[in-house]
Structures are given as structure tokens and as C-alpha cells.
Image (tube, rainbow, N blue to C red; front, top):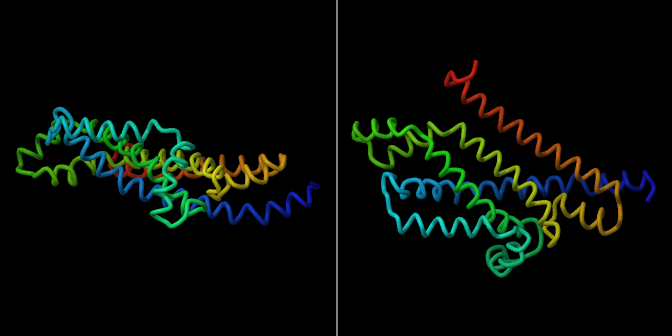
Amino acid sequence: MTLCENIYLSLRLIPLELLNTLYMVFASAFFAILIGLPLGIILTLTSRGGLKARGWLYQTLGIIVNIGRSIPFAILMIAIIPFTRLIVGTSIGTTAAIVPLSIAAAPFFARLVESTLSEIDVEMVDAALVMGSSTSQVVTKVLLPESLPSLVNGVTLTIVNLIGYSAMAGLVGGGGLGKVAIQYGYQRFNGFLMVETLIILLLLVEAIQWVGNGFTNHINKKRGKLA
């Protein structure tokens, strides 16, 4: 294809598929956080030494989370096609891709939450308990507020990973920039679109990371942790 033809094709495909990628990524991030945050809190509370230590529950949830994290995303997309079709009525398209994306990201974010909450100073938790705080109050008034900068970093990392996953969703008709790279770039030997899509994805990752770092720095600055 000539340069003009490539530019025309790019202008016709890229804006729409970029919006589809953003839709997939942020919708999936929302559901991943919705599932992963409480799951991470439960893992923290039920772990050994936790406020509600329950070895059997922690081990059970831990196995489920580990299984979810260990399945390659390309295999996960195919394996849960019946479930995806049950939820959204189809297994092809941008909306359908949100289901496997959310399932892939939720256990990842849950582990990040568990790791973050586990790093909170035990003395702060003990002080809250001495003052008569309930478990829910410790979570909402101590653990989550104190770990907020790290949680923002966790959300940023999850979104960045979802951008990579969303590109793979193009393998099974998931839409987005991955669709452009695979169907119009790779399969049609169009190096122009391949390179352009790669650059846009890299810029998108950098933008997300920059925004996430900005939020983290803002929170730390308000707490006097940054000069």
C-alpha cells in the first residue's frame, strides 16, 4: 500500500479502535478493582496473624487467586467463552472481551492489595483496636487510608497490564488496537499499521503511568512525604 493509502486506513481505523481499547481497559479495571479489592482485604484479614485469621479460608482463596493468575490470558479467553456468552450474549467483540479481561486482572489486583495492606505498621492497627475500633473500622480508617498511595500504584500497574491483555484480545475478535495490529498489520503484512499501533500502545502506557504517578505524588505531598 502507498503512504497515502496507509494514512487513510489509519485515520479510518485508529481513532475508533483506540476508543474501544480505552473502553475495554477501563471497564475491565473497574470490575477488577470491584472484585479484587474486597478479595485482597479478605486475604489480609484471614492470613496468619490477621485480625480474622482463618487458615482454611485463606488457603482456599489463595489457591483460587493463584490459579487465576497462572492461566495465560490467551488460554483464559478461549476457556471461558461459554461463560462470556452467558454474561453478555456473545463471545466476540469489545464488550465480550471485558469479561476475560476482568477475570484475568482481578486476582492480580487482589494480590497487590494483600501485599500493600500487609505492609501497614502493626502498631497503628493495634492502636486502633485499643481505642475500640471494629474490624471494619480498622479496614476503612486505618488500612485503606494509610495504603492509599500504594493502592493507586497498584491500580496503575493493573491498568498497564490490561492494556497488554487488551492487545491480545484481538486474537479472538476482541476489537481495539490489538485488532488493528493483528488483522490489518500482521495478517496483511502492513508494517506501517503495526508500527503505528505499537507506538500508540507505548504512548498510552506512558500516559497511564504518568497520571498514576501524579496521583501518588499528590497524595504523598498532601501527607508531607514529598518535599
